[in-house]
Structures are given as structure tokens and as C-alpha cells.
Length: 490
Image 1 (cartoon, rainbow, N blue to C red):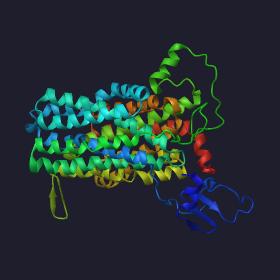
Image 2: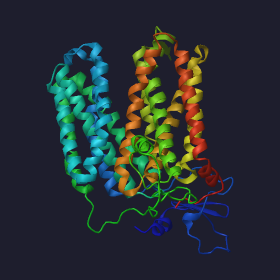
Image 3: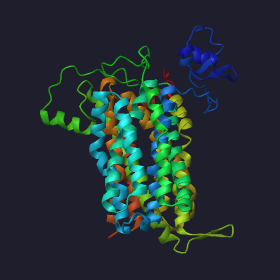
Image 4: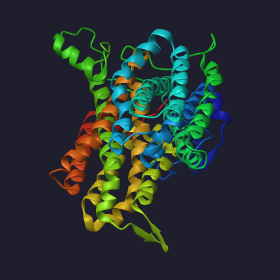
């Protein structure tokens, strides 16, 4: 559909002399520019910060979201039932951590494999194979017992997840443009999160009622629903690729003053270092590479500290601060229940990702990231002070919401920075930064606890996020200044 048609067909909201619709704000009394495209409008001073338009989700994104939500349910379920039912799986408690982290370790290698497969065969064949693997691994959880079978299933799932995640990124980037990429990316991530929530809640209920084998086979059966949806992801021969800027420097929203480096006289070691950090992107200028690396580093810091250190140590923190649990409104709650409630807020606020994406689309994704980091730092600082534990618990949902908003903004930003014909490789390296952070976060936290306190752990995590804030603000300072002056995001 023509973008201008979307603008004119969407609901309008009036604020004084200004009109807002799906494509932005228009000064209806601007007689000097009567033919101005409404996409060029920015919010007037004093106008509502959020004006939510109708979200038009491309058909391929909807089907990719459905595929990912269907196949992730079995994996999410294992995180719930394995720690509490180790006897049914025939493994010792000491091996639970190894099983749950095995898929992340595999993804350090399988992300690059997934990028190669998508570049070589397109998305249909690798995605179909990944769905079959995901269904098989879910069934293996149900019928298999023992460490060898389960670790093989976890490793197979790691390979499949690399394909699902990268394919999802690619479809969203292809079907969106810079002006709406945050909303579309938010829809995808929140949809996948819905599958995770269903897997945890319904899977846990099935496990208690029907037992291990039957419950996982039901989840495997639901995964079969993903297979028919794959055909809908195939582009028709006449389908147009989402509009994007000419790719000499390949960024959708980069600083136009940055001139690509046409001739590079760099040493082999220097070039190999950039290839290792952000994947081989020789057509990007040095400034563009720095932006890609900064987004990856910030992404790594969020997963290292908030999804690794914090989530991984929250249960231990609860046992130290509330050894006897807590009584809320006359109901005694155990540590596991309290910890589960706090961690679940992380998933629940993630359902608001389309709203977070919209805010980033309209007001600048860089601002979202820069605003989210201090919120997380405050949360960690409160956790570091024993006397402020109640305030920290109240603040945590806000911090988890800030993480969800920042991740949505970073996902959308990296999609615009990656060169069109190298997106699979750049996105796979971006995903690897996440996996490294999520994997080493809990390990680092518990290693430090052997000789230090949780106070030091959380203060160190806060310091890491302060460094990420400083680096991100410095590298993206020009874009933030442009956004503050009302840069149109078309």
C-alpha cells in the first residue's frame, strides 16, 4: 500500500492547529508549505508524547511471528519444569544449569551457520528444517531421559533457534522502513514472548496434570502448526522490497554527512578485527562501523547485566534478604513464588514492545536507549543497598520495561545500519553478542560471590551500564542532536 494512502486513511488526532495520524504530525495552518508530506511532521511543543496509530502489520511478519511463537513453547516450558522436576528427566540437580545453558553455548557457532544458510538457500528451506528440529527436540524432552539425550536436544534447539531469530530479524527488516521499523519489530518480539508465556503457564499446568511425556508431546503437536505458515513467507515474484536508502553506505537512518571510505589502506589485522566484531562489512565507513559496534556493545551490556547477572542472581538475593519468604495481604509467599513473580514481570512488560517501538520511531531510538540505561542503573543501585530492598522490588518492573524498550530500539537500529546484502551476517553477529552476554552474566555473578557480596556485584553491573551509556551517547551524539531539532523519520 502506498505510504501516503496509509497516512490519509488512518485516524486523525488534533492538537490545536496540528493533526496527527499514522505517519506523524502536520501543521494544518502551514500555508507556506501547503503540499508538505505529512510524514515530515514532528510533534509540536506540548503535544501528547504518545499518539498510537493503528498498527498495520505486514502479512509475512504476522506469519513469521506465529511460526516463532509456536515453536518456542517447548523450549520455554523446559525452563519451568526441569528445575522443579529433575527426577522425571533422570538427571541430577547439578546438571540442570548445564542443560539450560547448552543451547546458548551452541549458538555462539550456530548464529554464523544460520547466516550462511539464509544467504545460500533463502529463508524457506532453513526455516523448514529448523521447525522440524524444534518439534523433534520438544518431543525428545517428553520421551527421553538422561543427560545425554537432553543435552543433545538442547544443542539441537540452539541451532534451530539461531535460524528462527535471524529469520525473524530479516523478515521484519525486509517488510518495514525506518519510520515504522520499531513498531513492526516490537510486534514480532511481543508475539514471540506470548508463545513463551503460554509455554510456561500452559506447559506447567499440563506437566502437573498429564505428566512429562504427554505434556511435551502436546507442545510438539502445537509446533506442527508452524509448518503450513512457512509457505506464506515466500515472496511473490512481484513483491517489492521495503524502501530503503541507497546503499553506498547502506544505513537507513545514518548521518548523511558521513562519507563512505572508498579506498581502504588498512592492515590485515585491523580488517580482521572489524570482521570479528561486526562481521565483514568493507563497504561501511569507519563511522558506520563504530555505530554498528556500539549498538552490539550496548546490546551485550544489557544482556550481560540485566538478563544475565540480575535475573540469574535474583533468586539468591531473595533468599538472602527474605530467608523466610514474605507475607502479602495475609498470604505467605515462598521465595520461589516471589522470584517467579518478579521475573515474570520481565516477560509481561515485553508485551508492550510495539508501544516502545512506536515511541522510538517517532521520537528517536537513540533517545529511548539513552533514557533506559539510567533507569536500569538506579534499579541496580537500589538492589545494592539492603535497606532499600522494598524500593528496589517496586522499581524492578520499571527497569525491566526500560530493558524491553531499549532492546526493541537496538533491534530496530541495527536493522537500519546493516548493509542490505550483508544483513544476515551482521544480524547474526549482533545476536552472538547477546548470547555471549546472557551466557557469561550468571557465571560471572556467582564466581564473584565466592569472595565478594551481592552489593559489589550489582554496583559493578551498574558501572558497566554507565560505561555503555557514555559510549552510546558519544557515538550517537550527532543523531540525538538531529532528533532533538525535529529530524523527520521517513
